Image 1 (cartoon, rainbow, N blue to C red):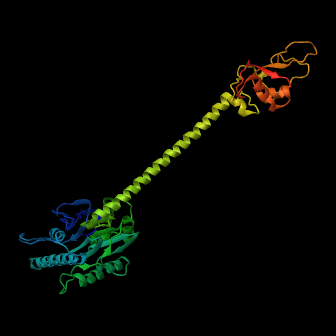
Image 2 (image 1 turned 135 degrees about the vertical axis):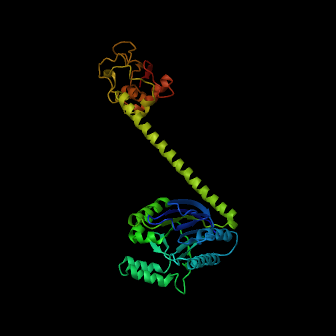
Image 3 (image 1 turned 45 degrees about the horizontal axis):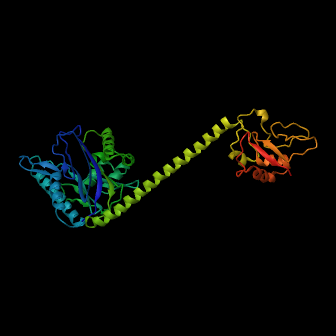
Length: 433
């Protein structure tokens, strides 16, 4: 089976001010305009499928004078569309059948014009786009135009008259010369009438945009403005209406039809390989889900880091605000883990920068030591020291032994196992050295 193609298309048709009826018609995957008396019609379609036929015609819907025969390009394309979708074959063979249908309708209408009492021959033209197997082909007859926009490049993919009309817009040809040239190419009155021309078959690319429009639209809008409108990054309905509005500004007399076809997303898998493709799609979904989870975890981690940083800043701020009055000793490790509190004493009784200076000779030390009594020449065996705020074993050792490393002697004499566990008011025995 063929490849799937997702399309988005909009067609708008407007009856001219000088027209008694809308002579245009269109075909959009089974839909077409039934009543030509309708002044304005818009159809929008979004769909995925394997094959599509889109067409615009002008003057290719006729009714015989006796009103017993009606010929319509749109109706015949719908019948052919159902027939093609029910049979096999490649795009080339189906394209031949579409071309033959164009020529058949052309011959029928030509015969009806020749057999009419008035003998008046109305100009008719039509163009179609056929999508199948991930490729696209164009057919055109007369002056109905097909344009493609790919990667910002606009080109015409319709018939032979396009070059002559470009010469007209450039001022090289006059309207009379163009009409004469057109009659030589595709006039009904000639002995050899040209059928629908076939453009080359191209592979579909995502984002391709196709325009099918009647000659009245192309005549009213110059190439630069046409390119500007088709390049708009808007939906097909907006682009189609903008182009029709621009054409009506320059010529509101003729019937006009604009069809915009956007190839949204050509899929590269076939129905026969649907299961493997689904597996591959599942891998893609799993990869996207894993990536999404990774992004979520990244966001969570970033949030946690921000919370931690904010917490540290708040802690430092409150530490500075409420703990700024506390002095820090040089031996921060020991003093921070001890249970000694300095908040109960006035600032004047706090030690200076953690240094424990020995008392001056002959000075009083009512809290630091207790005399043991005796005569003037008596030297006490042991000295008793009352722990005050800010005391450490190293400081006490420095005070009495002039050596901070002898604090172990004090620990052994007092049965202290943890040098940091001192409490205000404890009485320590200081062995004599």
